[in-house]
Image 1 (tube, rainbow, N blue to C red):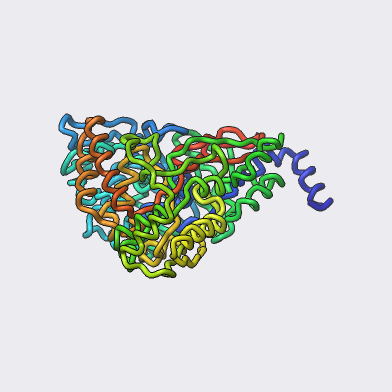
Image 2 (tube, rainbow, N blue to C red):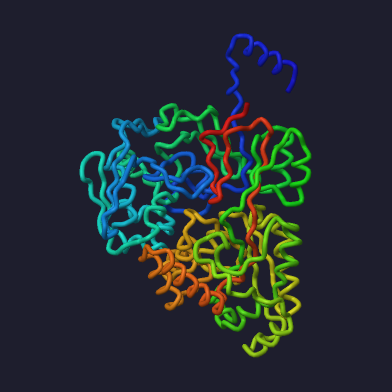
Length: 530
């Protein structure tokens, strides 16, 4: 800061213009959001930039937990047969006022119907306006689960289901179930500007969208009318910094006050710095490589099993995370989630048996496969270059030549949806704490056409088991069904599970009111810099 700038700020402070909240809360994030119409997307990065800032849902999670609490619905009842959910909506909730939209009414039942019917009803005028479709809604089978959504009165809405669905209420707390302004939607449709729903969002959430510069920053201002109370930070800025080392440097320089997902190697130095603090949690995450069953040799289950046996998971975890910061993965979701099958044994590291299986499957020595991964570091892949090279070296030992392609996150997601990668470094963070949230969006047959099943694997036995598990409410019965589904998954090997990582975030020591979320999304509505 030059002397002139310093004198300027001192003068403003003397006049009382500069307050404790004049400085915005800056969060160094790992990637650009794909857009702001969260119903079109599934990634946590996009959810942070939209669902956790701009929007609210009928129900929400208590911060730091998977426990449900009221959201835009103050209360609800579930019928005895589990087929009807009646929500009583909160009164007096205001939509955002911006330079591109000024609401004439408060939130009501019409907004709930608009938000869900555009995803549910193919005849809805907004149904075909989503360039990316509605991957979550469709891959979870909600288009066949929900029979109808009815407006009982201005502040009461009733969902009727075709069959019972155990995680339905938790599903409604997920990002894709965010509530939009029907009035704004009608305005955009009439003006022929439907694409602006994805670039100029309107919600009821804690922050109002201000502007977005791709690969640079997203800016928000606090919503003074937020129903849970105005956020203490008047401004919120997401400073997009894909390199975790850069995020940490910016944090130490106080250019940002929170830096998401530091590298494991940096944790000790963060703990030792009195100006910083480190938060950690056992998050609901899995890192894996998806094996595209539509591509050549990967269609053969023996090849997929061979790749699983070619990977030295212990060495991978040690190289990427270090001791005690993660554990090798076995099943498609972490051990803390309902129904995890502890009886399934990890794939052994056995290069010789892997080579024998590849030979048996007719795979020639030197077979080429392409490995795709994000170039940006995150909690599941903290060092993309190292992680892909470790896998490349393991595959080389069994005669597979792997070519590495590192892409910007948004481009990687697009190519994954089209099925371009042979082997895809990917991960999943649970959205509601239920096992179905790991299995149905990522591994079901419904998720294949939506482009949300990165291995493009569809197995009827597996599908039947997870569909039955969703329809029953008895936990013991659900556990048995999920254990059977995990056996099928293990034998068919559409993924090579890699790691269950812990989640870490770093912040300035004077930051308060931020709670790490086991579901890995980040909400800053109560965060401030003292």
